[in-house]
Length: 173
Image 1 (cartoon, rainbow, N blue to C red):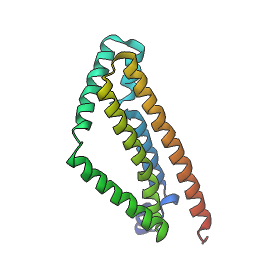
Image 2 (image 1 turned 90 degrees about the vertical axis):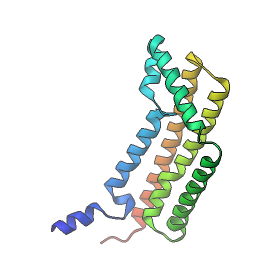
Image 3 (image 1 turned 90 degrees about the horizontal axis):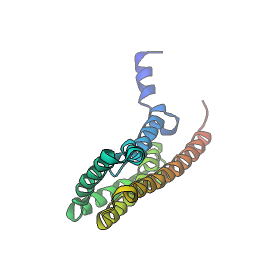
Image 4 (image 1 turned 180 degrees about the vertical axis):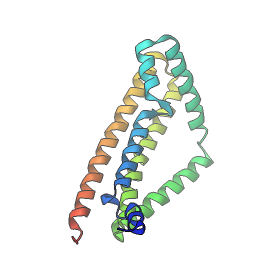
């Protein structure tokens, strides 16, 4: 086995049989479920357990991230939605119409993140409108994380099913 064989084996474009793809999927969902509205979830749990200064820090971080995320409304949001829609549609077309496995993997990774982004955006708007603090804010962040985790579990299950189907439908040898 030469060095070229090793390198091409590492950069293989067969997505579902590649360890790098599955590592990227796991890291993506780990990050998506840990950072809720840009706030690390361990800070939410510390505020729930300790209260006091930890709760004040949480409220400050949430307020900062809400302002940061809500400034994207208007023209930047339209541009981001347009680019995102193009990427998701292109991945779906290339993957499922033209049979490109790399695009199928990209679609399985990006499409569920659209729901996470929509859920996060809706939660940001609700939190900014209600201006929740203390236990109500913590409950809202825990609830948002629960729904993100549910999306992640569903996405992982569907991606694994598609990966199994693609792997079993390929020719051996």
